Length: 97
Image (cartoon, rainbow, N blue to C red; front, side):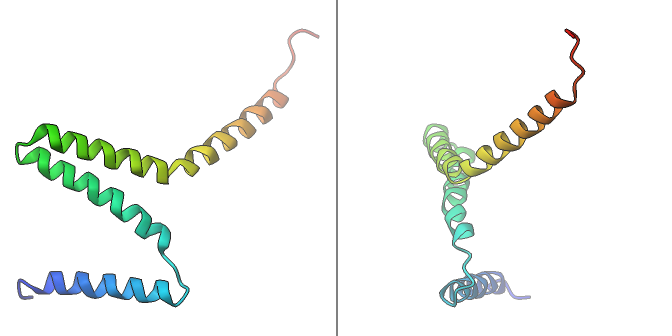
């Protein structure tokens, strides 16, 4: 494999994903996660290249954006935890009877 083939395959893959999105087989949620992840990676690269203040700020901003995109997972986890806790309360024996 030549040195430029990796980038070419990446571009072909991204183009194919965009075409699938236009055909209605949307991967919009994944593209919405792509930008915050790229911002975090940019911050990490800046951090490792010696610019710790800028890298830290950029990575934290990307983390907050990603946290906002994935906040629905926290709501689901809280709802499932409430159901499990409620069921476990029903299953306990009442010691005050």
